[in-house]
Length: 82
View (cartoon, rainbow, N blue to C red):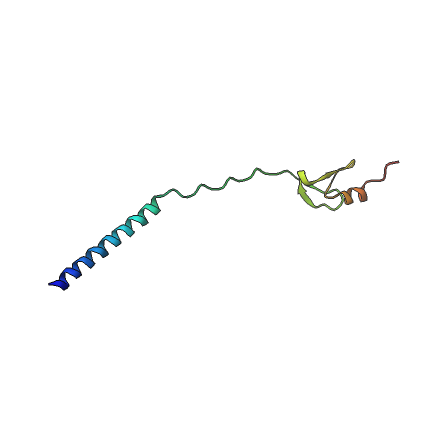
């Protein structure tokens, strides 16, 4: 008789444990997925007048004759002022 009582308690405990686990899985599946990260705005791209490399407009160096990727390219492409 004692073994039947122990078996009944173990079965009830297993049933309660499985029920709680199933409810937790269902709750996790019902939660909203995380919001997607916002996409950054497009950036205007320009080409270097000397080498043709494309780069963001904000990183470009402006010269008298056009836009360059570095100050060195600006100095190489533009004639020295007189």
